[in-house]
Amino acid sequence: MDIYKEIHLDKDSPQHLYMQLFYKIRQLIMEGKIKVNQKLPPIRQLANTLGVNTSTIVNAYGLLDKEGFVYKKIGSGTFVSSKEEDTSGNSMLQKYPIDEDIRLMDRGQIQIKENMISFASATPTSDLFPVDDFKILLNEVLDRDQGDAFGYQESQGYYPLRESLVDYLKEINIQTNPENVQIISGAQQGIDVIAKAFVDYKDTIIVERPTYTGAIGTFRSRGAKIVSIPISKDGIDLDLLEENMKEHKPKFVYLMPNFQNPTGYSYSREKKLKIIELAQKYNTFIVEDDYLSDLSFYNHDNSTLKSLDERDRIIYIKSFSKIFMPGLRLGFLVLPQSIHHKILAAKHTSDISTSGLNQRVFDLYLRKGIWKKHILYMEKIYRERFDVMKNCIEKYFKDIGVSYSLPEGGLNFWFSLPKGYDANKLYMDGAKNNILILPGSIFFPSQNESRFFRLSIAAVYPKGIEIGIKGLAQVIREFIKKDRRKRKGQDSYMPLL
Ligand SMILES: Cc1ncc(COP(=O)(O)O)c(C=O)c1O
Image (cartoon, rainbow, N blue to C red):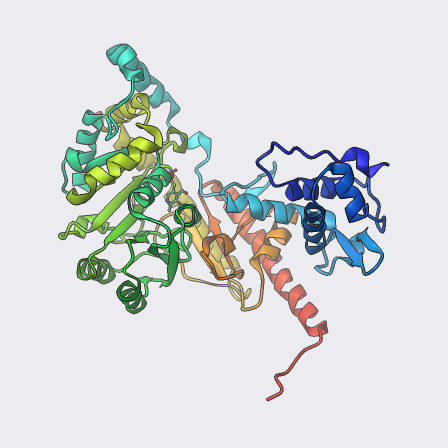
């Protein structure tokens, strides 16, 4: 095969040329079109043929080398690696999907093949979406509002919906008025709009460690400095939080006080109250991402910070994506009085307004009480899964070498492997057995923490949970044994002193 003829680069593509070249050569290797130990074209020659700088070729070959697809012989060139030479013990073809999967996860996506039990996704399965009710209400809105339902909506949001949200909020002890409510196209947009309104290059944001990947991405995109404070079973470390608030004067602190993503941990009431005091003391805001307080089991105190906020320091973000229909892209903010205008301007430049049609249908959902019926249904479904999950973990994860602290609600369970073990590799072993876990590394803003993983019950039925957890326990047991054996075989080093 003539390699030169197989490679075409698109100079108009936003993707870097060296990445295009990396993907192309990797594909040729994986398809067996470039054989093991075959020499890749010399750098200068390939650069001339493709009409690119030699650095493009050097970077692409460097990346192939790093990922184990090629090896370099000094003075001779770059050659395709043999599968057996892969030191991780996996063949390259097996290694490929994990790299690709982790990259996808960083972008909040995961590829799920048929027959897989996926504990990786925290999105409800589509059979739980109330399509029939939605259809009836949608028709009602269309009959009632006709073309008005399709115009631009007020940027702050459809007023009747903001009124019905105020009533909804009363039931969870948040007292507010429609002027403080800002409709958003999902919580992710809420985070984005808040960052846009407040954060300039090099401003500091404080977050929990670990934290929601989507928030890390947004804050990074604003050029913010992200300071992360560890979270434990009853919430963030308050001493460290205060120290860092004092030192960094953050634009805001981003928290998930109930059933935190990814850990499932919830803050004690004392910590919730203390955090509001700290926000007042250091003259900053707390962004409370309430993506899941609705799913509280075992009478757990799921009060929101907003319901305890007598200082007007909490920017409250509410998402319904885990319990309603995430594709509707609907959520809302409850804002401190002083920042309405800033947030409204940022929202307007984001998407002008959230879909008026969806807002109208959701308004009827709330007004007609259908929402309550739906929430009760979701609670029942998730409560059953939650109980099965809890029981299975207690039964099968005993003495297998992972640590965890079980939450009292929500959808996520967080685990830690012993020090030195890598959950990215465990992910691979799970996937080979058709069980998907979510490696925790994507939830850490900077440190390379790879021994954690998250399991979610959102997309697994009770039967699948039982089979999956039992199977995963076996995978973990073997994984730890295998890795221990490998470690024993390795040379060990002792410090000289
Ligand atoms: C903590 C947290 N916040 C926000 C979001 C985004 O939610 P939405 O679909 O409402 O944009 C998610 C989604 O998983 C989440 O886990």
